[in-house]
Length: 582
Image (tube, rainbow, N blue to C red; front, side):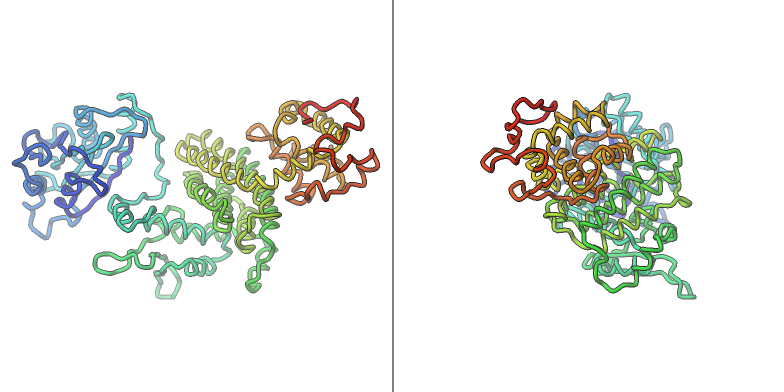
């Protein structure tokens, strides 16, 4: 059950919407289910003689009784309360009880207080009601509604348990402020799926990803097309900032500004400065002044980001909470960098993952003294390298990074769950789902080529690699040899061997880097780790053009007409490894 409190200044306008047809004719049978005093609130939905003006006048009476100079400008308190998808539909009587409990909990109208604010509860849909109150009590005083949003949330958790509804996650006051219903309505009228507040939050976050200085941050904001207004001290120092979308104006034609702190708690200028003060490694800082050419290719930047993400996952499994919190901030920047430079095929899912993970980066655990320079530098490298094409080495390197990022988000979910951060843990799981979808898209082509390569290997070579796997990873070997990715893993081990590596040693290094129990596909994780550790290409050549002097020395090559995977029929008595394909 989700309450969403906002304030406004027009009682009649809000009631006209609640009792109207809705923006898409979605309102059905609008009517009152409860009010401050039964019989005193006219119901224009069920009483043909009642009007919206009559209801407005009754609600606003305590406000109008005050001298004009004492009337609050934003005197309308509005709180929609919605059940979660899948919950049963409550009766009018149950919604009336919900309404009374919430106005009591928030200080709008406490039980037994005959001088409390006037309020009503309107129902025009099966799954929610709208509470409306005027913020002047019958005695002319203002209600005590400090932290009314938190108190409404707490009461909803009790109601959920008592009514047998889904019990939603508790908040901890670190979430970004949600758009108001007026902001959402304005976006819908403009045909937009996101409000200006949400668009600005994402662009500010992306501008901060990997930024090395405050000047660079503001330059990126301007390049993103945002209007910027800095608050300056008499000395000329910047004290704060606010941003606006071009064309987003109020009824007076003025830009609608949002300060950083109104977009998210960690986007205020002091919090941004704390992040920037952690700095970047000297090697990266020395590259900052170079002129515009990218420092490296997108594929290389993504390959180099993977070990930084692995280290972040390791920190999340450690005991240093400050370090883990700092790494989460860095992972958020890395996701923002990957999302804004990703190819079209993965951009939507990566953008959704970055937006979900934004919630994961904030909790009450502070990260001021921890060092996340390595992962922030990796994010900077991705930004400076520019957009990836999603093909060839770019596609394989993107899959390599995304495979690691899935494990990082799972580690983040575990870390938050262990500390009771329910909303952050749920957001991490959501980010992981989007990353899995992006990974499947990015990995499809390179993994298909590697599987084809692996199926074309001579059987003794496949058997030798299966034996190495069983020796190094006995607890997972049976499962791995049955996975669809075993062929790709065999191809990777073969390439590593031909590049001069000892496959056994490389496998041991890959397995020692981090546990594999959280991996959806052990073979996929091992493939990308081995390719990164062995400095192997993120793609593989076609089997038709592949040559291998090592294989030709061990046995005659298969005839050209032999189907992939059947080369070992020159030795039909040779045993096949478990899971090896015929």
